[in-house]
Structures are given as C-alpha cells and as structure tokens.
Length: 320
Length: 247
Image (cartoon, each protein chain N blue to C red):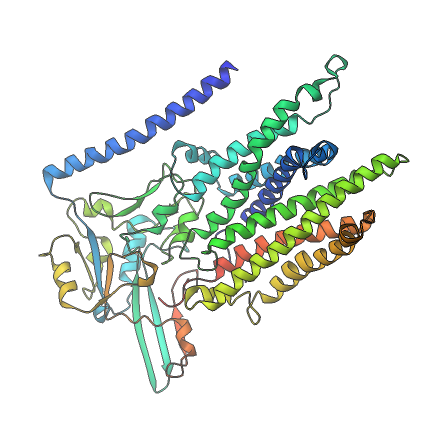
C-alpha cells in the first residue's frame, strides 16, 4: 500500500472537494427555487445563502490542486483547444462553466455596503433565480462526471461500473448538505428571537432529513455496487474483493465509509428527524450533535473517494 | 462587456479553427502516403521460443530514446513457476501493443495521443499532452509512464524515426535470437503476416477488447494469480522495472 499511485492525494482531494462544492451549490439552488414547495423557498433563503457562499470555493480549491498536480499548470489550456468525448475533456468544460456560474451565483448573495444600493439584493433576485436554474444541472453534471471519469477504463475494473457515477453524485449531495449544516451551525448565534430560532431549526430539519434520505440511497447504491461486482465472474469480482471482507482495504472501507460515514450519522439523524416526521414535534438537535454528524458525513465522503481511488489503482485485470 | 464578448469570440474561433486544421492535416498526410504507398498497419510478433532473456532490447530502447531511470518503453519479464522438481521459467518481452482499439486514445482529453491513420502507430504529441496521467490509468498493459524529465506521457512508438526511413525498430534490430519480428500486418505477403498465419499466436489480455497488434508465439501467460492453482503452487514474476508488480 506504500507504493506510488498514478493518481494520488491531489486527485483524491479534488474528487472530494468538487463533490462537496457541487453538492452544496446544487442543494442551495434547489432550495432557493423550490425548497419543498410553496413559499418554502422564501423561508429557506438563509439556508440557500449559506450553500451559495460555501459552494464554489471547495471546487476552486480542488481545481487548483489538480492543475498544479499536472506539473506544468499552464498546460491545462490545452484542454480547451478541443472538444472530444473524453470524460476529462467534457468535465473540464463543465467545471469551467460551473465555477463561473456558481461564483456569479455567490456574488448575488453578497451583502451591500453602499447605502444607495440598499435594494441591490432584491433587484438581483431574478438574476439569482436564473443562475440557480443554471447551477442545478451544472452541479449535478460536475458531481456525476467525476464518477464517469473513473468509470471509463476497462483496465481499472473496480471503477468500471455504471453505478460509480451515481454513488459519487449521491455522496456529493450528501457531503454538500453536511457542509451547509456544519457552517450554518458554526455561524449560528443563539438569539432571543424565537422566530429566527424556529426558522433556523426548520432549515436544519430540511437539511438533516434530506441528508438522512440521501444516506439511505447511498447505502443502497453501495450495496448494488458491491453485490453486482461480487456476483459477476472475472476482473470485476477479483478487483472488488479488495474492499469485501477479507480484502486489504475492507476494514478501512467498512469502518470509515459505511460505519462512520453513513450508518452512524444516519441513525443519529433519524433519532432527531423521526419525532418531527411522525409525531410533529419540534425539531431541535443540539449544536454538538449537528457538528459531529456533519463532520462524520464529510469524513465518510472523503474516505469513500480515498478508498475507491486507491483500491481502483492497486487492483487490475486478472491474468495477462 | 465588449472585452468579454471578444474573448468569447476568440475562444469560439480558436475551437473552430482547431477542429478543421486537424482533419486537414490528416487528409494531407493521407494524400502524401497515397502517392508513395498504401496505408500500413505495423505490428510485431514476439517469438518467445527464441527469446533468451538477455535484455538487449531493453538496453537498445533505453539508449535509442535516452529513457530516464526507473521507467521503460520496452522491458522483459521473467516468469518462474512450479515447485522443484517441476519448475518452468519463461521470458516475456513487453512493449506498447499499438492496439487497434486503444483505450488510451479514447480517454485522452486533449487529443494528444492518437493512432496514426497512415501506419497504425499510437503516438503521444508532447505539444498537446498535459500530463494528466489518464492514459496511464487506461492502458491495460501498463505500457505508458510519465516521463520524469519532460513531465509528459511517454511510451514505445515502434521507433517511428527509424521505421519511417525503412529501418526496423531498435529492439528488433538488436535482438540476438531473432525473437522480435516487425512488419506490416496489412500486407498478407509480409513475413510477419505469414508467421501469424502459420503459428499459434496469442495476445495479451485479449478480453480487454483492445485488439493488440503485438502477437506472441509460445508465450506463457502465467500470472501471480495462478499460484492459487494446485498444479502450479508457486509463481514469481520479475518485471525488471522499478514498478515490481505487474498491473
């Protein structure tokens, strides 16, 4: 395991950060546009704002990392000289448009400091909506392409699965939500204003319940990924055995990704979500719980990328 | 606003001009070749029965291209299998397979790597390569590497500079046992085509669907996984590369 990887930590971090950013922007935009129907979107404006203010920066940081991983950063302009069907080429174009669109989207949420432009935020509302409509498909596109990029190679049987892209998409949305919960909780000041407090908990409920649902979906996708890889014969079965019980990375995968990243956060989230869902009690999770759960989801998301990228490269086709 | 519009227009123009020039140059070379000869399809047969594992090909290749330390365009693997007294040892010379369906070309995001239409050699254009290592991942034969000096993807190119002047590749030229046979697979009367027609040949990792153009006669495809078989029990593959494991 100590050997050099062709795609090492910068790429793993990029895949994780791009997922978090794309997920946060997608969630922020969808909440702004619909937010659960009715005037929900209006009430969750603050939540959308958090997502928008976080969104583009992890993606930019990740992109920065992979550009410098190239060794010759200015070479990356060669990507934009052509359009071809390589997932990396399509991804680069998507990423460029996404970074631009999501950054503009972030700008529309910035507060105004000039007194004459007090109504700027309201005047920018239509632009914000348009950008949100653009950012939803772009964010999903960026999250999906990272999985498609890994999946494009028969020489890497562990990655060569159509469901890997879906796994990365669900994980991106889930980690994006976790990031919003984390930042929102950290920056939240407990005020005397009960109305504001109620809104905060409503936003937290929307996020936490969505996250619990996404984690359920993610567990299902992981189950299908492993199940079908295990039930086939040949390269894929051989490769996936590294993360199945008895494999070299099995412990890491089941403890960090499945237990710490998915099962435990999902159970904690459900403990707080179910009373509201079933008995219509008020949702209020303690600050420490929100922080611990969101960090666990983020760690799980990172470990998922780490293990998939690592395991994919140390396994190959069987035989010669 | 106008500056942005102008930048966008330049970008579109750049894309628009890049695409046709590429196809133009393609037709140019095709026309050029049409005058001289028809399209070729270069390939190689490695007759493992004649290989003595002397690494002359590895060394010739190293000196031909000044390949940096720790990486190889061509190399020879030793495969030892069995338990005394039932043991076997064989050699497996390796190089880029110049596949008919090259996965490295499919994934290249900048069109830096492509299969030359005139002779089927898979090449890397170092002017376009960005060093993203996608092709290195995609190659089922581990034939590609990142050149530590230039920072670009690098691999065997069938000694394009020699072949285009009518010579054989350096490894073929130096092979002491005559184990490497190079030629045009598209010509049914070439030595290589006759060899393939008259012998049992195999290719590496056929199930990958890459249709390699490097054929082997008498190759032992034993892999470390075969050590699990009771009749083999022990397998040791020595790749003679810095990367000690076959991938």
